[in-house]
Amino acid sequence: MRKLLGMLTLLAMSMPAVAIDDSEAFDDPELQARYEEIVSEVRCLKCQNQTIKDSNAFLAGDLRREIRRMLEEGLSDDEIYDFLVDRYGEFALYRPRASGKTLILWIAPGLLLLGGIVVLGGVLRKRMNMPIDEDGA
Amino acid sequence: MSRFLIPMVVFALLIAIFVVGLGRDPSQLPSPLLEKPAPQFDLPSLLDPEQRVTTQDFNGEVALVNVWATWCAGCRQEHDFLMQLSKAGVLPIYGLNWRDNGPDARRWLQQLGDPYVATAYDQDGRVGIDWGVYGAPETFLIAADGTILYKQLGPLSWGLWEENFVPLLEGQEQLQ
Image (cartoon, rainbow over all chains, first blue to last red; front, side, top):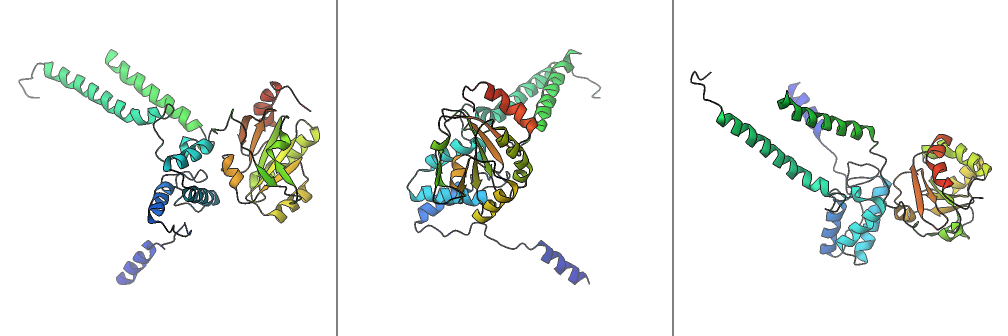
């Protein structure tokens, strides 16, 4: 019984390996590598927490097709990202590029860390100036 | 008291950011195409594949471009509104039939009525990408000079029309 349960559990955990992107690979391995990288950097706008690599929404398929076409036409990675941003905004990229509008996204973690250090420093300095309690309470 | 003041202010600010953030609908993305010239297209007409529907067709007039498909529930929902708007003759409505099946789409217009001056048939979604379409229905308000004035996501209604389109139309010169 126990063995059966164990096997059933394992079975339930198995996941079918299904390729979402069933398009043919590029003949040129370098192009294929760039393609793979770009499709895993672009957000599917319809299913917002998936990249177009992982999504089977038809919009994701259309975008993959366009990226493939642009790679074949010899466009650079930046030109392809520009194409997407011009149409869908920075939100289409999982790593929005540092520009005026997205600057806050890039500097906010640093600012928060700096703020934390300043507060911590202040608290520690205050503590150091406190008279030492001889009772050790 | 003062040692609590700064944390309180920071906390209040954080809450304010959360309230504003939660109030937003993450599926409503701002379009980078606003205030820019409408992307050109030249597509076959849905009703007569021999004919072309192009952006030139609504050059020089304030027009509505409505992205729709028969698989889209929101499009069915807004269809009655579009029929009424087209009958009212406020402005010409152009259809962009997106990622759809031609015979189904023609049947839809036969059965429910055709509010469009012309419908372009974007079968492979290529033009949809140029227009930054990510979900139907989407409706673009185009100025006479071809600039995109506004983009509405989701089904239209008289309420949304009054709220979002009428104020923009008042600023436009030509109306039918």
